[in-house]
Image (cartoon, rainbow, N blue to C red; front, side, top):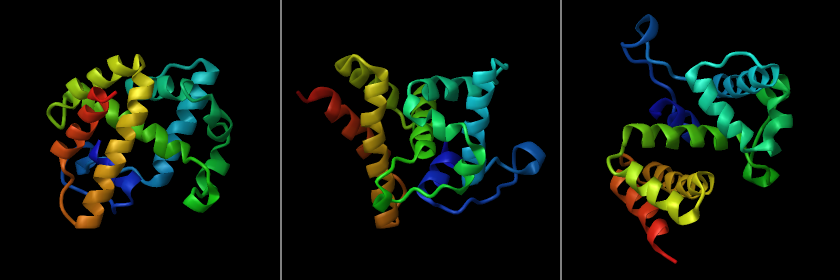
Length: 167
């Protein structure tokens, strides 16, 4: 998750001495876009998906508004998503779905699984809950970048819990 969140947040990737070929996977923006476009293509072609692709394909299916952009790899690699354009970045959005799903699966930060489950029950939709958690995650990343401090997992979980318990 950290690698995807760093790419999303614009934090430069750092290579660490572990993992495949002695390096931890640190995807570039193009790697992330290529992953989602290739996953969408494999899903459309009925080809087998690895576990990460299968999870991504589930979220892609929830977002038909992104299918055209995911269907054109070259355009996806060249696309720019700025606030001024008023367009949602589908790769950022889908990456955040995957990041949240990973956080929940390993309960990191501790308590996020319970908070997301509570919010999903309240909203009667895991998808809707994810969208609200994205706002909390984005706020945590923004606060961290602004302050220069590490992300505050406790504040993040509190924000999700507040959404789950308010009317």
